[in-house]
Image (tube, rainbow, N blue to C red):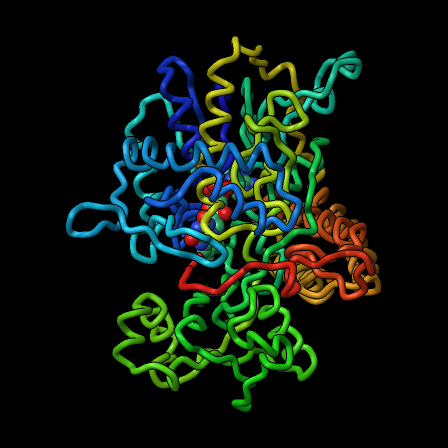
Length: 543
Ligand SMILES: Cc1cc2nc3c(=O)[nH]c(=O)nc-3n(C[C@H](O)[C@H](O)[C@H](O)COP(=O)(O)OP(=O)(O)OC[C@H]3O[C@@H](n4cnc5c(N)ncnc54)[C@H](O)[C@@H]3O)c2cc1C
């Protein structure tokens, strides 16, 4: 199969790139998702909103806020690009092309929300379901465009790169280039090579490599792993942002409990009902910055063997107020038989956002020619060591457009034929993909990452993690080579690979900074979450 541009992933970043590329009607675009429904992505889960430009706001003020949150590691040109183009593209693409209606007042003025560590009101939202509304708008637009083909239930196995996949042995003398991807059709249970002039990775985050995460099941680091295998640069992989409060449940995806609950007076308690945040942040207590609260909860759980801690809003606000202020959280918890107007909420910290990823420039180009990366899978440098709330949807939008514009400005790149690459060889596969084994191994990876490469890291734990993950990686690779493919097996292979990438990066970097915390931190390292180094304040932001 051939296409002009292959886009892997159908969240905000991939869908935006597809719509912009399709403006040239002769260009054929294929966008694929491993999910059954194209709506199933991290983008649809986003609650709080997306950064716009407030009435008393400027490009420079937004830049400053992002740079402060990034704890000295954000890449200034990328931040400038996001702050300048982002709010303009939000109007042009989301409101203009996708027809989105953000919340507005009776006079029709957009309502700008304030979120943690933003110095201005600038967050646009659609209730507390902003991501869902954005994705509905983008997918509606996309489905009406003739030169875009959307394939769901298709999982990319690996990128096709030369010289690695070249049928011609002399290609070994040529530079590394990308020519599409090998794609597993889940219904036909076969691998189809899709050859493309350019390939855009838009596979989202990695939250599922941790036991507790707010990310849906597809966020398992597939893009990071396949880009790494292809030889692309991966950077800042130690910077994984953890959210302090997700609903404790047996679900693989933990429901996010907004920090606004603590902003409105909610107090964290041990399962025995004792407040504990004073121990970790005497001056701020429950209103301490996100990382400190997350680590406080984590320490209580680990030190005392608690499966969760409690978050009590019921004792501090009237029932009617809680129902009105937090309708979504109230309704979700009630479905789990937790009435938050009467009972404290069991919460755990959870992996939330990947600040690192495949290194890209301002146009989304990776270190491999013809391969782009956009959205959470990429590292543009915007987020540095920590992400400012509500900037990730905007980053996906901006780099989706930047990559599309860069491709549109180029003269056509050669398109290969099937005989240029070897056929997918699935002879000699002796096992069926046993879901028990896959789930068991996946659980081990997630468990190990949570305990040894989680919120609080140390040399000793990281050494253990690397040793155990390497063994698991070897076992899983061997199993992979002898087993018929399934989406779960592809995900397992990518998860263990991504887990190793994160663990190695966390091991290499002994300085605590932003969301990477080493308890055996280098003495000179200044942590961005110590009171004097942080201006992170708690506000009503959901994200
Ligand atoms: C609970 C929650 C709340 C959030 N709230 C906010 C918020 O308020 N504001 C904000 O800015 N950000 C928020 N975020 C972060 C934000 O949602 C994500 O960073 C962003 O949506 C990522 O978009 P993306 O397009 O890069 O990836 P995604 O939206 O995750 O899309 C990834 C796509 O890749 C596909 N894919 C993955 N692997 C493969 C494969 N091997 N083959 C084929 N397809 C594949 C998936 O199926 C999916 O279509 C939130 C995240 C979560 C989880």
